[in-house]
Amino acid sequence: MYIHLGGDVLIKRNIIVAIIDLELEKLGKTNQTFLENMKIHHKKIRYLCKKGREKTMIVTNNDLFFSPISSITLFKRSFMDIGNNSFELGIEVK
Image 1 (cartoon, rainbow, N blue to C red):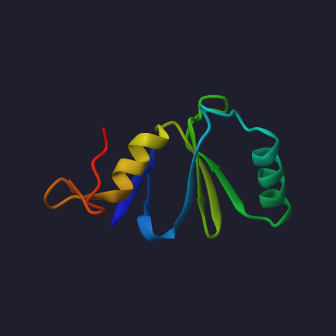
Image 2: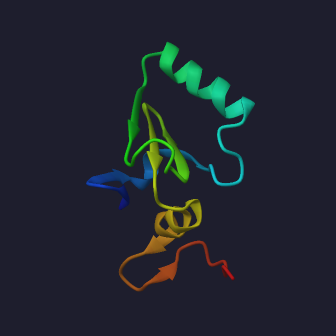
């Protein structure tokens, strides 16, 4: 299954390592260090919106995406079964 991250970007949900909410902590020290390490190791960093408008950082095995879509929406999309519009985990999100 694919997840829409914003713009024209779709990725397979099984390659997502982390979905990090930037609205809670606008690139704090830990996230800044992580971002610098991604740059040092020549990982691809893609902004799917204008800088400063990103809400979520999505980490995959090889890439890092900054998305304008909220982490809650991306989380729901990552566990949604499109066929019957129910969560695969069997948990209720309120």
